[in-house]
Amino acid sequence: MSIASGENKKIRNLSPDDDDLNKEEETLDLTLRPKTWNDYIGQENIKNNVRVIIEAAKKRNEAPEHILLYGASGLGKTSLANLIAKEAGASLRTTSGPAIEKAGDLAAILTNLCEKEILFIDEIHRLNKLCEEIIYPAMEDYKLHLILGRGPMARTMEFDLPKFTIIGATTRLGAISAPLRNRFGAVFQLNFYSQKDIEKIIERSAGILGIKIEKDAAEIIAKCSRLTPRVANRLLKRVRDFSQVEGKNSITKETAKKALGLLEVDELGLESGDRKILNAIINKFGGGPVGLQALAAATSEEEDTILDIYEPYLMQIGFIDRTPRGRVASETAYKYFGLKPKNQNQLI
Image (cartoon, rainbow, N blue to C red):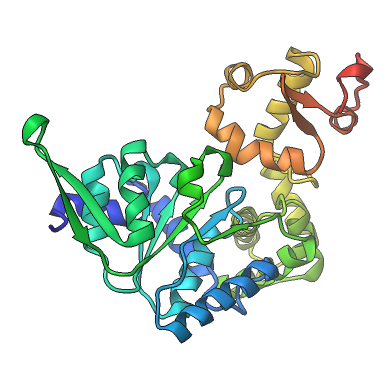
């Protein structure tokens, strides 16, 4: 069995962008990704554990255990998968849950893997149930079970697969079924970074981008980065653009402040989307509780965007909390807008 030419699209990062600017951004993001363990700043406990898994697998001459990485968007799951493959001396194939539309797509990918190769599945929580049924024996016994034909003529065929490793990444651990989750030998949570680590990431990225940055400027950008490397790099690139347009060859504290002001990013890292969500909870829904569907409708945002982009950080800084009845704004959120809560019972 082989992958048809049209199915080759299933095993690479799918980002259909026709805009040249977006392609340039994607290239820059790849450039800024860490290439070695020393370049990968933060998440020390995960790095140490992964190193043990890889070293033990090498000594046994086996493929590393299947690994599941979970955490908020932009914390470095894809970068970590690339480093694991490099450290293990294996090639990495990349796909995503939504890209694997049919069981046949997954079967084609699995049968084209080589010995000890690593398959990285981003957004693995969006893998459909039929694909999950195929992936269970593949992960456990390295077997592929396919049903050929229909009705009385249907028969099951079994194919041997090479010993491979799956690295799954997800922003929603709870959305992964227990049988699939239990087939991963190691599960690691990526946490938000410390400000000091974000400053180091910004300084490293500035060097790669070929622009000098003052320590005070790096500190200001780090404070606005939502404790997330992807956001830190995005803000750094925008501040760099602003600095170069002004004819400066280095990013100063004043330049950083001015650029972030134009981007409508405050010192807490909150952007217009965050403020829109907080405003809706406080003003439209009286501080909450409010359900996800109602909040998405009120803010014209997708539910997935609220869950994956806005909510994790707003919860991290203590602005909202999730209760059985919905989202609730905290007293800190009210103070941010210079307001007082109308109902003290609604507070976190």
